[in-house]
Each structure stands twice: as structure tokens, then as C-alpha cells.
Amino acid sequence: MPGYEDGQVTNQTGRITDLWVNSWIALLIVGAITWGLMIWCIVVYRKRKGDERLPVQLRYHVPLEIMYIVLPLLMVGVFFYYTARDMAEIEDVSQEPDVTVQVIGKQWSFDFNYLDDDVYEAGVHAEDIGLGGAEETLPTLYLPVGERVEIILDSRDVIHSFWVPAFLYKKDMIPWYTNKFQIVPEREGVYAGKCAELCGAWHSAMLFNVAVVDRETYDAQMQALRDKGQTGALELELSREQHFHDAPRSEN
Ligand SMILES: [Cu+2]
Image 1 (cartoon, helix red, strand yellow):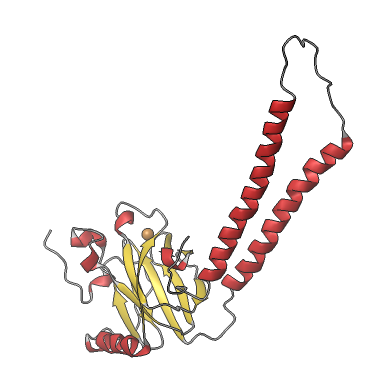
Image 2: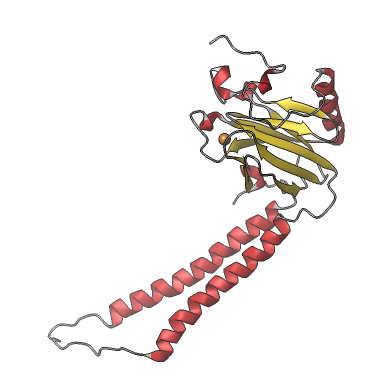
């Protein structure tokens, strides 16, 4: 089962886990019935010794044909209903968020504009560090626990995808098209994030961390960015050099 013993990571992970687990239960029940019927037919109607006659050939059996059209439609309808119901909740962005963060994908890292605090963090290109994806070089997205966060997703080159496996959610980052979603992080901790859309040579090193922290730690982090002079917001224009405001280039 996905998730942690000591609580849900976001306000949506419980719902997503339930959809996943209940779908499997429904599928296994359908599977068990189907396998059972198949085995029954194979065993009961097997060819017996000395019986050379052709079995009764059944065709144009209207009730049977109606059944195998209606039953699958019904099953798909049930899946559709629950999926649509949960997606409407998961994709709902109608509420006023407490915190809004713009996340910009770029080859090959992530930038974070903390719009309410007017500060930013720039991820360093994996390629320029030499060891792409090394833990200590990854940018960290800070989120305050228990507050409604709106994540705005953009890209400044190719299509990327914002994926935090622990959130059980991902969404594409598309150039010149803004995606967004809202969550309430509910469990403090550090979670791995990654790009989930093949975006070039260093795609696999396009990683980040998400730190869900209390309000105090969050404010301290915002202040730390301010103290480093990282105020304002990074622009969206196509620029692979833009991210080196403060990040030093390695020698290789
Ligand atoms: Cu990417």
C-alpha cells in the first residue's frame, strides 16, 4: 500500500489510495468470477474418451450477447463514475490558497517562485554539476504543513512533468501553457520529486526534494532566500543561463 503509517501526506492521498485499492478489489472479484467460469467450462465440457461427436453449436443467442455487451459497459461505467468523482475533487482549484508557488521546469532542473513572499530558488542544471541528481545539489521546494498550497506549473523549454510520488500525483509542465493544482500537505517530512516526462539527455537527473515543514521553518526558509538576495520571481523566457544568478558553475 502506498503512504505512511503515521498519516496522509496530503489531503488527497487517502482518496487516491482508496480509488486504487477499491479498483483492485473490484477487478479481482471480476477476475475470480471469469477465471472460475473458464475453469468450470474447461473441466465440465472437456472432450471425453470415445465421444467423437461435435458438441452443440450455440449461435445467435440474443440474451447471452446482450449480457456480454451490457455487463462490461456497466463495469466501465462504475469505474468511470468513481474516477470522475475523485478527479473532480483532486483537480479542484476553486478555493483561495494560503500559499502559491510557481514551479518552472527547465532542462534539467526546477525553479521555485514563492509568489507570496516574493523570493525564489533556482535549481542548478544537472548537466552543469557534473554529477546529475546528487542529493546535495538538488533544489528543495518548501511547503507549509496544514495550509492550502497552489502549485502553478510552467516550463521554459520542453514539456516536463512535476511528480512527487509520495503525493500520488503528477502533472505536466508545458511551455506557454500554465497548469495548476492545489493540495494541503498534512505530514511533515522530506519527499523525493522528479521529472516524469522524458525531456532530454539529463532527464533522469532532473530531481528535486519537497520539504513539508511547520510555518516557522517555512518563514525562516523564505527569509534565508531573501537574505541571499533571491527576491522577485524568475522569468519564464527561454533561457538556460538564467539559473546561474547565485549558483556557481562547476569547472568541468
Ligand atoms: Cu524534465
